[in-house]
Length: 394
Image (cartoon, rainbow, N blue to C red):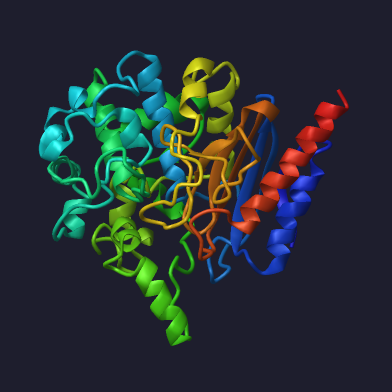
């Protein structure tokens, strides 16, 4: 299958990798984009808008990207830090007094952003309506007892991270904007990019529906039993990913109710070109707009979780900086120094300052992974290889 869009001379290897994905049968529709040295060098799409092949997947298509959203929320926090509104080393309760409940008074912003606060879900039952209501879910989380001593380990706050970080932004923002509005005003808008946490209803027809699900049932009972043990509804991972079952309904993330809500860890809607553009602007100016200053970025992209420490929710080693995932076996990205965030099923947004490289990848065909998607990695590897060739050529 072929792709459409822009590829700068010398960057054809990225198109080749993308079209290999399309030809493999692993894709229905997808987009990929690359910025290098602050300049757009790849912006391509291909395949189909939906499983019925009713229309092409094109530059106008928008895509829900699950946890790739977390990276954009991390950028919003970094903007607040560089403006002096927040400090990574200060207690969360300094900005959000109610958060101090149940022994959390000394938990720092850094511990919160690096998934060390043991707040990967709430205690007790919670409904979908409560999860989608910002005041309710943030009040519940502030009143939640940590699942482990704060700072003793880390575990993936798959959904709650966004509410926790987003409420911090809302509390310190002089205008008290929601995280969705903050992203529009301070990140997407200035760059002419599209990234929505809370999608306007008129844009709904542009959203390509996700196909498949993260946890497909396995026909082998033994394998299914193992999946249930590690990812079942009572496991840390199951509770974190579904918020105690409130988000477990199949197809829920294709619903208007979820698209309209603000779930800043899981329901961002965007395209590959916007992801790459936003990440490029965290490293330096893009058409005159720079989102994050270098000293703030250096702190934000530095891994703070212990090397090789098993994630208390995902049970494999994961690595986090200030809201970003960083280079590790689970998230290889473009090697050491990389930062960004993958999304369930395959999407990714990432940057590598040493190469001045930013990559965005989105898709509608869900793979059964949370990170390290082979399709995304093909795009990243091809882009990194071209960047290295250009660097060596001078």
